[in-house]
Image 1 (cartoon, rainbow, N blue to C red):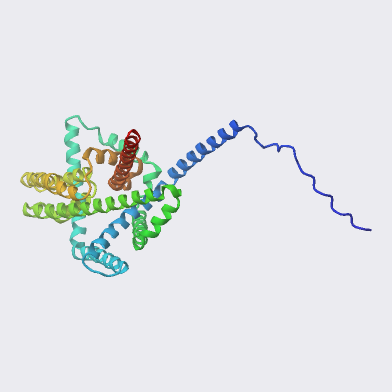
Image 2: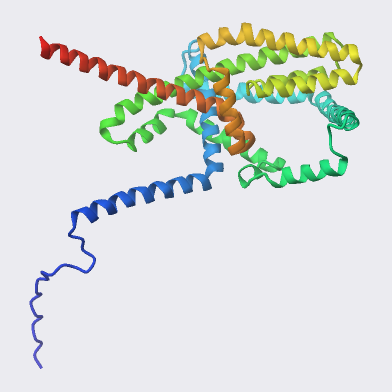
Length: 366
């Protein structure tokens, strides 16, 4: 039996059931798609806030490494990879040497500090209870349980030591990889931007990177100065645990305003545990160190680095800590400095456009 040839396909001229011929509906659907995509992007960002914070912290560490590499390049005319290796080795050697030389003393002082703070807190709460300003112990426990239970999922991942160490390791690894060749990642970000805006986006990235390096350089100088001055002043006054208080003051100096308040409270509590005279010495040390830092050191450093208004930084720290926990509090200043740099560049662009428009209007009038 002979095979019949396939029939010729007929052209379908009628409209499909899902075809939209109305231009108005097509435009509105496109707009709705944009809004839905924006809402989905925000939802994904909220769900991925933890890894996004870790990535941003890694970028901050990369800027810190990059600043050290650039500073070392002014002294040693060698390749970038070797300079980065020297910076990493010096950082690791400093950390290991510090823990090795002061580990036993710091460990003992940390235990003593915890016991001292517990005793002082109990005394203070007892005095408040006698004055009728503090609820009973059972009420305090209930308030504490409610406060701990209200902490969201965003900050729960930093509750364990293993989680904190893992997070720090990932931050350091990301920072090291980015610091090896930051140009690759910058070109990748520029590739995601439309061609017409890539040149301006590159300028903004360079401005933000330079601002971040300057901010971190100033923070490190402030941390070293506050830690060393506090250590020696407390040691001269006979305040117990002067070393650990100096280290904590230096570390907390990375977070302006709030860090100084916490370190001062710890310093004064430990001072009064050894007597009223030592407590007043601790208060004087705190006031002198913070006055020197606020009115002498910070203005000099800010003039050469980044000058952020105190109220702005404090407001950003409050919002970041409420939304993202302790890591958000630590990263509030770098984020604020980068946003300030981007907004300043945007204002410069607007001024340039206004200047070009005025020149064009003057040429037309002439």
